[in-house]
Amino acid sequence: MSCALCGLPTPQPPVQANGRDYCCTGCSEVARLLGTMSEPEVAAAATVEARDDPAVQGQEAYFHVDGMHCASCERLISLVASRVDGVLAVHASYATATAKVVFDPERIDAAGLGRRLSAAGYRFRPRGEAAPEYDERADLLRMLAGGCLASAVMMLSFVFVYPLHAGWVEAQDYAAIGWLAFELAPNALFVLTTVQVGYVGWPILRGAATALRVRGLNMDVLLALAIASAYAYSVFQLRHDPLDLYFDVAAGVVAVVTIGRFLERGAREAALREIGRFLNAVPARACVVRGGDCFFCDADELMPGDRVVVREGQAIPADGTITDGAGAVDESLLTGEPFPAERQRGDRVLGGAVLREGHIEVDVGDQVRSRMADLAKLLWNAQARTGAAPG
Image (cartoon, rainbow, N blue to C red; front, side, top):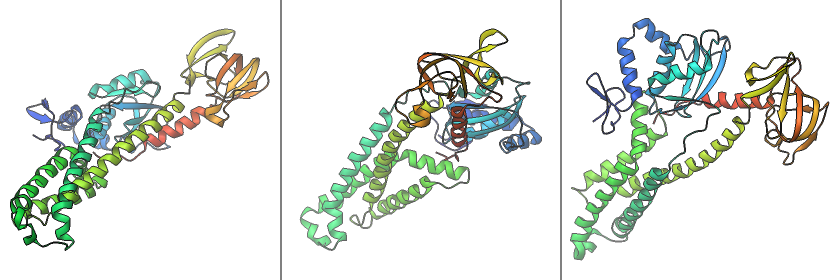
């Protein structure tokens, strides 16, 4: 059973709406919205992402998006955003599961923005919120199965197929074990490769199908073409020349790609954890002394001339000059210096650095800036603008 919108196989049970089956909430909502929207609304939704340019004036918010299932989810986010009052621009990336939203803070606040965009079945997590733990067991099982199945296919091919292809033996040389060479071995290769392609290679085939659905091409399309060609030719040859088979090609490509992607995912997860550590180093709140009063506010609400109180273990919310106190400041994320440096009255400190010892007050100066926040913004923009890779 396939999705009524994107054509991907549906889970069991499928997501049902209006008498149709869908693979995810995203596809069902896209279908519903497209069915209820007028042509001008559809056009507006199609261009909401294009409005993300320097001419758009508004406050920016960055979110992790949980629940993106396929490329249709990007369209759904644009459709939902086009109906939210106060949203000026949005750019969602299925590849990185992130979204950048430009909004008018006078018409909607950041907290309300996350709630409104989450109404379509996704979860918009602010950039400072921890991500759910990744469970690698399913991918590990798929990788191990792929390696074992490919090994079995290669072993049978080395014994019965490769010698014939290399010209070392003739078909009649297998006459004494004809039932094994011409019946059992080819059928075993067929069964093993079918499981390899259908189960282990399913993410590749799904990625290729999704790319073709949105009229795009990616690496999965190339891989699926090679796998399907080798597999289809070998299935045809089972009834004509049972030793002129290329099941090993299909099984080998699937195994190599699956193992490579598993290892790549591990490396990427580790890299993302480090990036997350960097991004989350920017404090969201600050203790401010303003007009003789001391209170907490969002770091984005700091004003020129504010003095910020930083205690031991806290991150400095903005660049500035120490006006009172002294302490050991850890700037390792910014400068690479492994040891905290002593800072005292009159010294400059960088936003995002951590006060390891002491107690200081920092004057943010005539312009509120944070080097860490600037670098984090660049990283978030890079993630949000990563081209979507369907599948």
